[in-house]
Structures are given as structure tokens and as C-alpha cells.
Amino acid sequence: MEIKIRSFLEKEENDDSAHIYVDGSYNKETEEYAYGMVVLKDDGTVEEYSDKFSDPELKSMWNVAGEIMGACAAMQYAMDYELPKITIFHDYEGIAKWPLGEWKTKKDGTKAYVNFYNEACKKVKISFKKVTGHSGDKYNDLADKLARGALGI
Image (cartoon, rainbow, N blue to C red; front, side, top):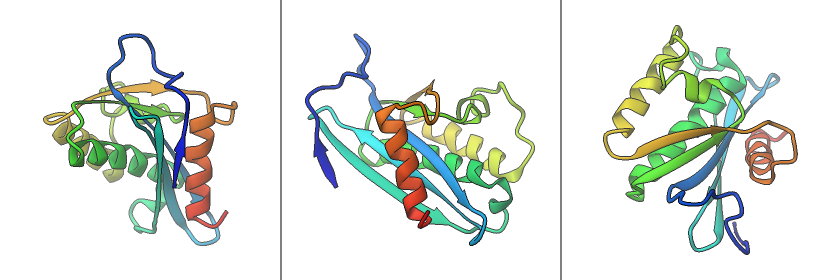
């Protein structure tokens, strides 16, 4: 679904990166996790993506697995569309802290995430911006809604 918006109000002056919002969710009943991703395009359109997973090794991380998959989806999107720079907006601080080396990677899922980030960095300049979850941030709320929707929540 594409939605037209008037302008990139979220962009700071001199920010030429593509803005991508990600969020994750977990369904305890089905033991599935999912991500929602919102891509703000320079032409004023908004692209929405989501997907769900049930990998036995990652599901123990609950919604964090979805958060990680969302960040990976953002990086993959940037590589697929040959975007030179992206800013990933996230509400879970590990999304930035693991790849930037501020948190140790102890689980296989976080180690794989950092490896994916390191490979993506060879093709795309990636920066992170923490936003407060469930605070009325339009695109973070939309990413959350997409993640929950993928799980039927």
C-alpha cells in the first residue's frame, strides 16, 4: 500500500539518507515473531512491509527477533535498491547497540545480526536513530501496527 505525504517533516536539514522505520512483535500463542517496516521515499510515498517467522532458535528472543529481522530487512532493502545511505529508526536500543559494539552479542541471533550488518556496511552507509515506542511517532506506530498485523494481533 502506498500513501502520499506532503513532505519529509522527519528529515533533519542536510540529511540525505533514506529513512526506514522498523519494529518487531511476538505472538506467545503461535510462538511466531514478525517485523514491520516503513520506508519513507524521497518522492513523498510511503512503502509498508511486514513478515512473520517461527525459527526455533530465534523465537526464544520473542519480539527482539522481530526487531532484528526488521533491521535486516531495512538493510536488505537498501542493498536491493542500491541506496547509498539509510537511517534506521527503531525503538529497541539493541538494534543500534549490537552492531555498534556497545552491547556484547551473546546469542546466535545477535551474532548473525551483527554479521549481516557488517556485510551490509560494505555497500550502504547505515546510521541509527532511537525513537520512543508507543509515543505517537507516526511511522514507528505504523511499523508496530504492521508487525502485529503480520501476526494477526
